[in-house]
Amino acid sequence: EKLASHAGRIFALESGPLSASYAIGDDGSLTVAEAGAAPSLTLTVSPLALPVLAADPSRWSELVSGEGDPTLAKVVEELSQHLYGRCG
Image 1: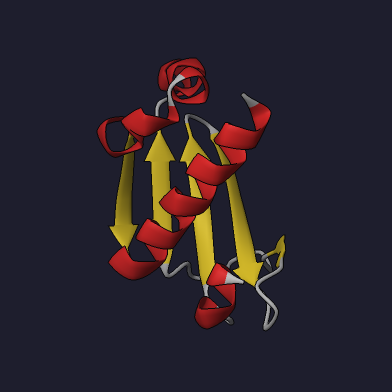
Image 2: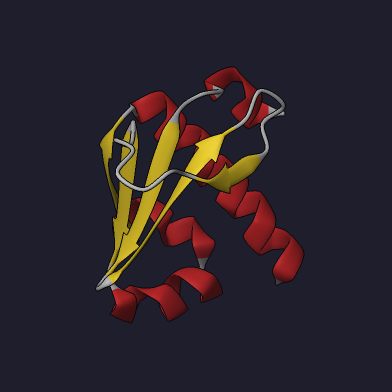
């Protein structure tokens, strides 16, 4: 629901050599973005920091850097905190 207000935007997640881009649908759902689509936001985290982030998602702002839409970045951060909270 929170992502629905960002419908049509694309964000990318990058960690070392891995990268994935997602398009936000009208209902806030995520689909894999088309190859070559320019993201509104790129989030980057070191592969070495992934276990730390999984263990302590409150360290997001310390471990994840974002370039692009700051409003979308905040929503993704909030959702990641919720997801990690459910997994932990």
